[in-house]
Length: 68
Image (cartoon, rainbow, N blue to C red):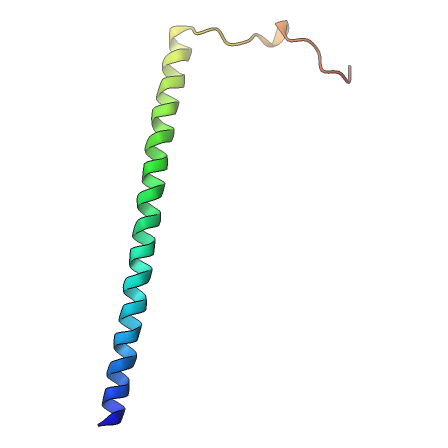
C-alpha cells in the first residue's frame, strides 16, 4: 500500500506545483494587461494631441548637434 500512497503523494505534490504556476502565470498576464491598457491610453492621448495640432518641435528649428 505504500507504493500507492507514494504515487498519490507525488500526484498531489505535482498538482500543488501546477496550481502555483498557474496562479503566477495569471498574475503575470493580469499585470501585462494592466500595462497594455495604460500604454493604450497614453497612445490615444498622444494621437489626440497630434491630430489637434499640438506644437511638436520642428527638426529644422533645432540647433545642430555639437559634433557638427
